[in-house]
Length: 219
Image (cartoon, rainbow, N blue to C red; front, side):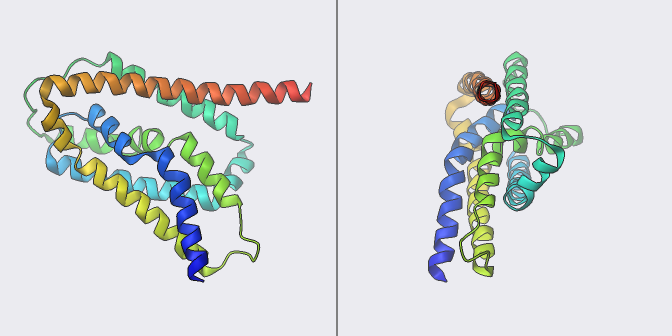
């Protein structure tokens, strides 16, 4: 039983952690919400972690059935997600520079940050098409002896580990902002905006390639 629990946790964490990449995610979030206060960063980290847990759990449990019900294939999911990520990166590239001084927190600013916690910071920045596709694939691979309570517990523990790592990295990304300074933060913001755009184009191209290959295979 312990062996099955350990195997479940390791498979999910090893499969999803490199794709989600919490440290890189924290840098992207930092570039999209610069000069956030400690309280704002703590709240956004908590919201992203909770949202990520819900999306990954849904993808592992019923993701394949949902896509099948709506007739959506994984390549189409990648194309749509790639477009959204590329647009987010492009908008960030075109965004005007922030003021050098930290802005004073206002109710409108806090509401704006909370509104971004699900889209685009959780979906598709943190848990994107790649992570969802892997989670769906892992969810469809049932053990030979069938699902046991120990497997379900292992899934829960694995998701808690992943989301806790996301929370820690996003929560303490402000230390990097203070290290970089105002100019360094602006440079990092533009750099990661370009990275986000490239990631979106890569995911889009991956999905298109799979769709084109399927057309050639049918013909």
